[in-house]
Image (cartoon, rainbow, N blue to C red; front, side):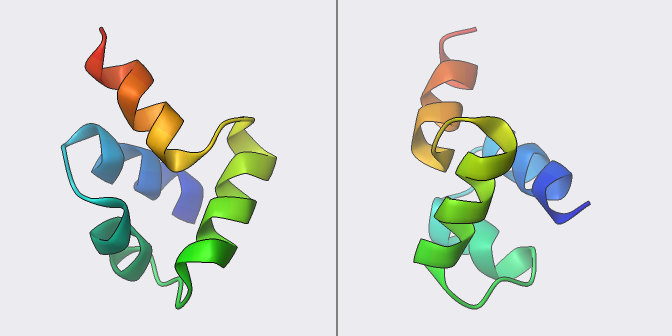
Length: 53
């Protein structure tokens, strides 16, 4: 659920740091690891991919 919420926040142009804290993660590095495990890309790559649409 938190990763789905993170995807919504990243899509709406929030920074990664804002997204980390809004989704309840306390560490940016941990968030990036978990996000990559679930989505197969880093949050920044995901954000760039969405921006190209």
